[in-house]
Amino acid sequence: MKSLCTPMKAEGLTTLKIRYDWKKDNFKMEMMKQWEPDLDFSKYNKEFYVESILTDDVIYLNTKQVRALYQKYGLEDYLDEILDLIRQGRHFGIECYYNDKYNIRFMCHQHSRKLGINNRLHATLAGGIRRHDVAEEEKEVIIDGLNLGRGMSFKNVAGNLAFGGCKTTVQMDDLDLNNMEIMGFLGFAIDSCRTMTGPDMNFPTKMADVENANFSMNYTSGPNSPLGETGKPTAYGVYVTLKEAVRFREGTRSLDGKSVVLIGLGAVGWYMGEYLLQEDVTLYIADLNPDTAQRFKDSNPGKKIEIVPLSDALYMDVDILCPCAIGGIFCDDNIPKLRCSYIWGSANNQLKASSQEEEIRISKLLAERNILFQTEWWHNTAGVICGAQEYLEGKNASYDKLIKVIDDTMPKQTFDNLTKAAELGITPCENVYRTCQAIIYG
Image 1 (cartoon, rainbow, N blue to C red):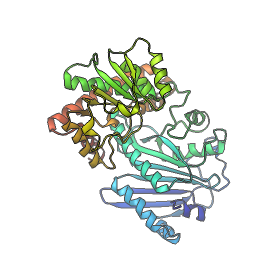
Image 2: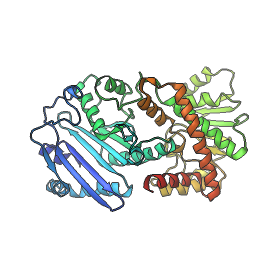
Image 3: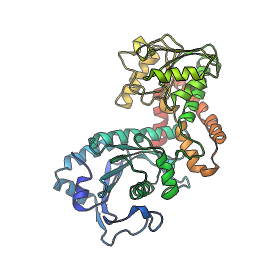
Image 4: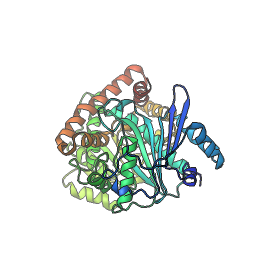
């Protein structure tokens, strides 16, 4: 399997940094031996720090030398494929740390630092950390990380957060929370990248608590967090912005009398359903697990709730379609069959598109059907705000403060976006991309 880490392993190197200047279309690459193979990372931030001298045998390769090394191992074409991915998305670059002892390939996919410059904090970037199996094709992992990193830049704009955007992917075996060498390495790597993060796919949330107690305060959203897990605030943000969408179109924030089909009752969808039921709505619910749907209905006696099959949910004649599970839903084939007035949910990447241009094109198809849709990362960002509040406030963070920040930020962002898009005669999807690009690249 092709990997950026192959030459690093062969040559006893530890660190790779790829930087890209999109204005000049220039790349700078560095590869280093930053520590010795027997370095005990369980002693990180106790006996040594990110800035410590960790070897007397430092090796440093510049851009030309890095390229020559990949050429030596028959990977120059693969390197160019990765560089082209960075170029296409105008990303800041990739920071990679390789732990040979445990075969860990740590990559922080950094889209933009612009919002995090001069924020008076260690972390200039923010974005989750997720685990991929070591056998997964590395290029696909990098594509996932770069796309999600760009999305985090945009989410941080939506949340008025003073952080650039990134996503960290780690290819490794299942995480052992009791292995302090591995936990110390993951703390060292995150701190080195100057990013604030929270456990994502295939990493347990308890990871953040172990890091906080032993190595790094740049992890958030663990079970012992003063704010708890992020599903509930994410749902709240979607709910209050939905009310702004209704106000934009109908002049009232009330959802009374509306019919809503909610797809997915997971970490966000369950709470979304509860928020919707605070108003006099008829709620149709669909979940992969029928028992989950029944539990939700039983937990809300006296409410107008009906369980429907997943196969029917998308095409029901309702006011609001609320997707809170998997993405990649809406496309040319099914948009003509939709019978709703609003699509407003927490699911990521709801439009079945592989590029920003394709998203904008599909959003126009929804607009032609008079369906109000706003790219979901503009209104499912309360979980990111939650992580930022914990990072900024520490033990002083409180749920009441978090809700106030959400209330002060997200409804206005949504109403302004919908209004501006209407003034320009473009879709809300296109307008949020214009807004973010003006801020990040302007």
